[in-house]
Length: 498
Image (tube, rainbow, N blue to C red; front, side):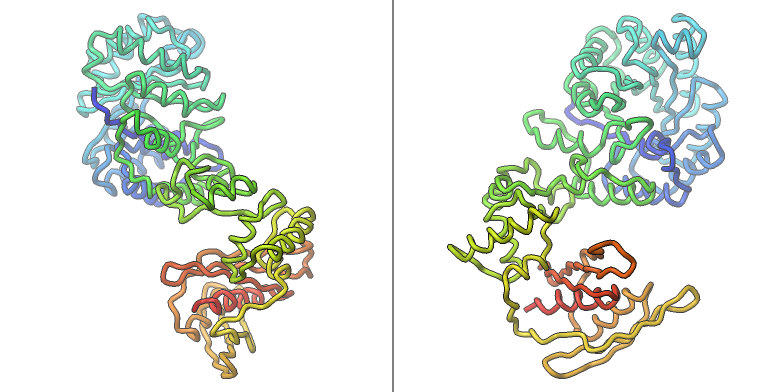
């Protein structure tokens, strides 16, 4: 049996069924092109008969991508299949995904039918779809709660009718990993013509076991996994692409291969999250904000000594620049020393012990300890070659009917220079003017504004991170005027560039 596991992405079909996550056609094309860069084998682009928008999306995605197979979903209904075939007319490689429920619940209560009639309808649907495309996938809806012996009869019949891929969905997320794996194994061992098709997993996350069930299915013989970016999907979601791919990649002993470029995972996750207006939970595996963040002192010390002490995945493998060390009351001396060194301070011995005790006192009063807090603890100012870069004057013009413009004067070692620039807003305009003045190629990596007491007259704390020739530099400032604070923080980071 081949060790290649085909990645079938249904973010644009099943993932888009999440309330509030609907995309327009242009947005779907953008996601589809990124999925192609990611390296997915199949893109399920929509359910064409459901709406003119879905039909058009399948048409346009078929035109926009070259390598992945484009799949369109249907019910076991002739009109559905005809509409799907029409939508796929521009696809370089097209697949019709048709099917019907096979569990006692679906047969009796949803379809008001019987087992024999369901098999006949399944056969007819596959045969009809084969009139239009060579690649036909059949789904046995609610296979997770279907009787294995009956399911095997259905699978044998639709393969004989011409199905090339058989989807075994755990539609309700009910199965345990052992049950789902055993179901795939049963089909592999009891369907005589199973070698003529690929078995596929499609697991929902109602009990939090979608990824485990999918992997169990693969281990027992499935060679296609149906997944979504960030695990999006109805109810509790679908199997997460990034989790399955990185689980297989991390466990080299499994010896499975995919065509996924894992370095594109974070970029794809962020794109889908932004366009679908669906934030990724902080502790989400692989792509969550905290997936590579460490706040425990024991963990921080271990990671600083050797990343593999607490990280089974190199962040760079999924497109994350580096792990983050978050300073809290649980942090140890090693993490504090590391962060201070990044800011330009070096402490050892009793000096480190002293500042660490003061750090703990502060950390007990705050959730996180920020860079400016550390600078106050350090009780000294940095000395750099270009230590006298500071903001002299700032004037901005902005409004709903005005092009945002900023005039910035900066003092460089006693000499004052002025520049004016426009931008998308007052802060962008001011930053553009500063870039003209400093004549250094810097890229803004992170920009964060925080209020201290959250009142409208509050002091705004601004943190920035800039990149210069592959090296990160951090800046901080605080001011009641957030535009001024932003420019001062930007200059603070630039001043640290040697």
